[in-house]
Image 1 (cartoon, rainbow over the protein chains, first blue to last red):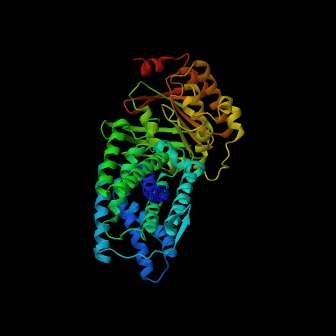
Image 2: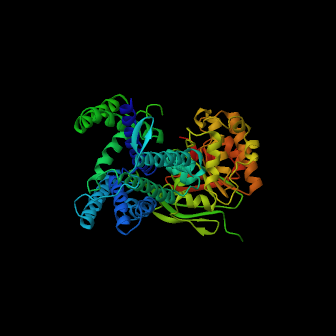
Image 3: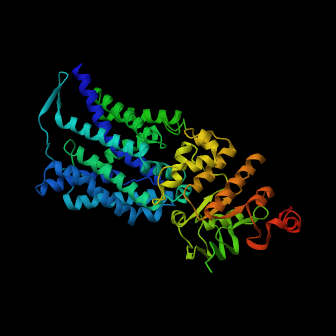
Length: 284
Length: 238
């Protein structure tokens, strides 16, 4: 019983961190029609921000605030310098952001070296819930992710800003014609997406090996989640990450990581074959 | 004398794959004036509205609005300056509620109160009944009323209307004409109407421009159009 509980908590943990990455990708794709191949590296930069802050003598909690703020800034910069110039050329956005991902990864290697960095666990003591002993920090991650994801959903579906954003997604020229500043919307969207990736990187840093390859490990399941869930809504991201992260965690606990990957890809192929627009796409 | 609401000089524009459509358009609309733009299909009427609203970039020429050079401005900037556009096909947000569609007409206008004014629902009572309904479930005529209402809540100084009568029953066309005329008169709003439906042109406008091959080639007073059908004959009949 405790075994099942721990497995469920682990799956939820992975799913929630993945959700932060996926939400950023979905919002950027929905609003700007840009597939951000550098999203994994924004996650990476979030994790390395923690390394940087801790080296400078700051606490993990300070890093947790600094990482999304720094990444929002980097997002603004990327939008202004790169993405803005290739908006109307879909394939070029993929190439440009992919190029950017290589640059970021190499810059990180130059700055920190290719080996893994250590980030201390800020909440090392475990807690007991329902008879299972579980790391407190993982529970903290889940709380942060749930809070942030709920905030994003609220912002998107309940606020005026969200209404404007959804209007841009539904019909960009008409939204602009009604006076919605699409330029500012693009900037904010990219900054928000980058901040979410940065936050995900920062919360995962104490649990993962912080090395220059860690971004890819999150980007691929995030893309799979979007393909499975559908690009049309944030609900798709939620559904996709639940399915991908859930199946991956469960299978890898029973067999191995490799079998888990095979099962996840197989599952994704089946779902995409049955629902080419993703699980939420069919209903639109 | 005050500068005209809209003055266009030598405007040329087109599409990357279809070449140039507008070949140097000149026109001027006074404040509070309602003007019809007529002509056969493919003569550039819709393209002209799109070029004015910044949906396509002009290749040459100049657009002045309320005394300011607005050539090449983005749609949202033109909207802030006071131009509203109801495109062909209406382009309402079908998955959003009627109320949300109307809120979107206000959302970019920071200086206006963000509550949809009751006056809009009084002018278009059917929208009040359908307030919470998804806009995609409305009939064609209701959707057209929504599109016009959405443009008008933002208190524009100039309204660009592209074929509002398309696919709508005559009784509703008549009501639309009356509503827009009343709003234009009360608010001092100018209107540029692209239309094939003569009844709406007669109800709404005082001057007619005729377009052929990307240029304005003739004009006349609307009230003469019913008697003197020579212009209509020459530029509209196929």
